[in-house]
Each structure stands twice: as C-alpha cells, then as structure tokens.
Length: 228
Image 1 (tube, rainbow, N blue to C red):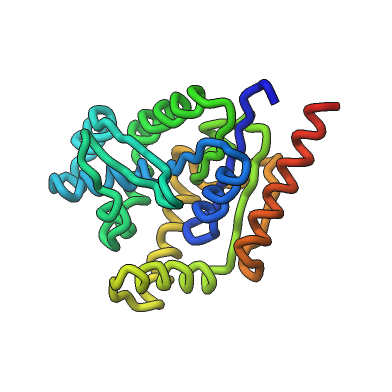
Image 2: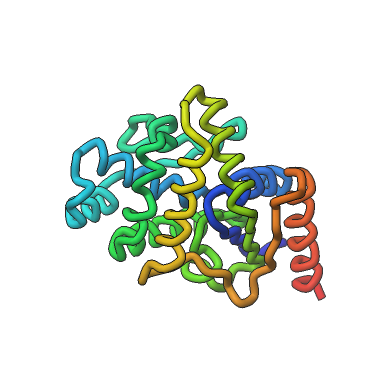
C-alpha cells in the first residue's frame, strides 16, 4: 500500500497489547510504538527526581526529556537523553504510579504530540496504548480493543515479574491492576474506553499466536476494503 497505514491497539494492563502489537508489527514490517513506555519513562523520571507530588515538575519532565524508543530483538529499549532505562521503567514502583502520571492532562498532550510525530515519520505503524483509537489516532485504519479477565491479567503480570526475579504476590498484582483500571477508565482526560468502531478481542483463553492471527485477519480485511 502506498498510503500511511495505522493500526491502533488499545486495552487495559495485561490484556496482551504489547505482545500482540510487537508480533503484528514484525509480521507486517511496520514500526512498533509502545506508548505505555513513554508514560512509564516520565513516571520513572518523576520517581528518580522525587517529584511525584509536583504536577508542574512532571509536566516539565515530559516536555524536556528526549525519549528514544528502539524495538530490538523483541524488546522495546528506552533511553532518555542517551541513558538506557529499559529495565527501570518496568519496576513495581513505576507500575504503581504510572496511571496517576498518565492522568495529568498536559503530560498526555505533550506525549500524544510526540506519538503522532513518530507515526507520521513512517508509512506503516502499529501503536498500542489506552487512547490510540480514541485520541491519538481516531482515524486509524484498524482499531483493536483487547480485553482479558482480571485473573488472567494478574497471572500474566506476576509471571513477568517472576521471570525478572522480582518477588510479588499475585493478590497484590491483582489489586494494582484493578486500581489502574479504575484510574485509567475514569480519568477526565483521554480515559481508557473502547472506540465505537474498534474490534474487541478477548485474549483470556487464546494463545499468543491465535490472538496475533485474529488481529492480522482484521488488518487483511481492512486492506481489502481499501483496495476495492
């Protein structure tokens, strides 16, 4: 296709957004953009600079930080001003605070502009987050909204921690996810909601290859419509 083609994948934490988006982008040869990593980066820097309770300072971090995302060998590598913080943005403390940081209106405005700029520089993009199909790219060619049960999402996230040798209790992870869901879906600016024209996919009981194939089929159908 000659035109720019954008795939938006939204959904709550642990629904399979990152895993699916990475694999879909790889199969299509598209750029993968993890918008959540950008919010995590701002959160990590706010913690590092001890300004979690200072919205103005957090906004300045979002505005002035040079956030660089590189998808290499299945991993989104994140650096800020030349410093690699890939591991740091996945720490439990970041998970606990990222939804509150993401709810700050000016932080979202700043990062949305950066996300749009990244996408405009490429002809094929798979972008995942919580407001891609509703705010960042409401005219995306394909909009996917992933869901999964809270039990399955907590199990997945706990497994991720265990693989990194981080000790966490399943119930604590579940409680954190429930809190993040509430904050994300009820915030005033860019809440986590399904776009009216998004295709919902429940990943609770399907394998990763199956959910990726379901998304690819949605994309194939959209491309066929474009060609008609």
